[in-house]
Image (cartoon, rainbow over all chains, first blue to last red; front, side, top):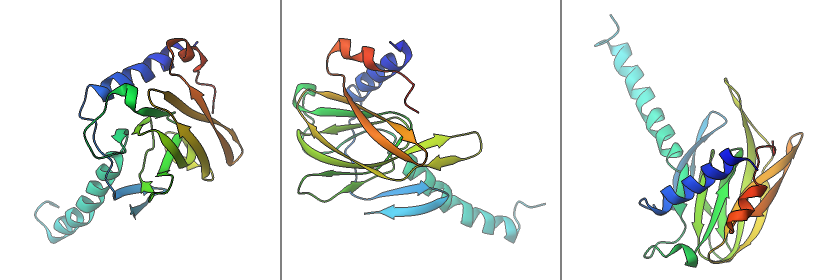
Length: 40
Length: 148
């Protein structure tokens, strides 16, 4: 068992559910391979 | 001196929008909820947690428009139960650059109260997404860092 990965995942899920739980936006900007794209 | 000169002002005008766009893209790392009404209890939603080497390009719920995002790094999606299609690539980060594999599609049926861990196996430029159901505590024993 990888305690580090298991704990990281558990902590991330707990942190998310104790936080704001932000809704995904329909349009996001992204930057990949050095170029900026607008996703719709 | 550069500050106060026309060259400096031009540099700021060029760099500032680029930096703002970068931060906007990074904002999708972490977690996002894929429904807009009142947040539901964890037993009523599904969690898809992506390994840091997964770069999620879009998530599509069956019969609905795709929701595109940049989800490089560890990413968590809170989904309503149903059928989803993930377009994702593996990414290898080094000190100086990131390299991406070819996009792969992951079809996933998610159930309420379940937690799914997405990772994969790379073969050259191609990779095969893998899903581990880690809903139960003992399921976390299956996690490791040997995927890439």
